[in-house]
Image (cartoon, rainbow, N blue to C red):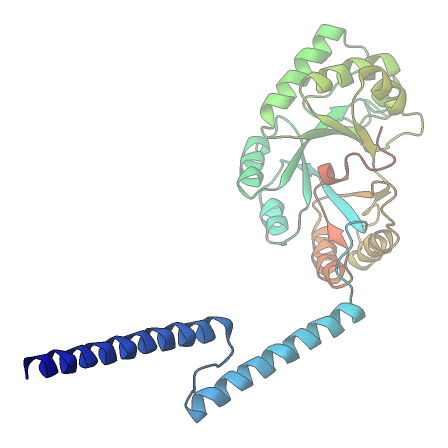
Length: 302
């Protein structure tokens, strides 16, 4: 009797062990199927339909994106233009209006004016590029005066370097320099080389506004080993919004990326309006307005 009882207990235990092993194996197989996606879990009808619709919408989105990419290819980095606005520092109103345009405009700030430092501080906070707009002697002096902080050809070296330092200090955060007037000073290779060597020490580049055909920029830059570029177009010799817009768009569309395309304008209401309108069209046509320093190193920079 006792023996039969032990056999029965043993049989029950073996049965339980077999059932436990089978259960464990089933759990492992089910988990593997869940992980690999062999047998997805059964979902309620409404939930399954929702997932199918979402997947369908995603496919349409991808197809639409591919089609749009063929029609309007992504912007090419080769089509870039730098817009420099000169003569900043007299008034903050045009600065605020230009900052309201969501484009990487470069601002050239005149030194030692009532709003020179304020403009530079404001532009720096707005992450816009700043140039020192360096006054230089024109051929028409004294009929035309370059303004405070001007460099003259009859200055000695010490006077030029002293004045240059004052100008740099009055326009903080400048990454480069461009000339204001200067048709006479820019033609003086010796004086210009002195200035360029000092700019080189200060890690500043130079943009030649091309106010004279006799500019000695290239020769002086070679001696000073300074990075320089040149303005290609003045936008607003005529203060007419439609003409300024046309000049800017024609220049931007002709950009092929082989040389720096730098255009210069002034904080006139007509220029501000033209730049505002052109910025929208440039974005649509894949033309990028960039800080002037973004063009450093392109063919044509010395």
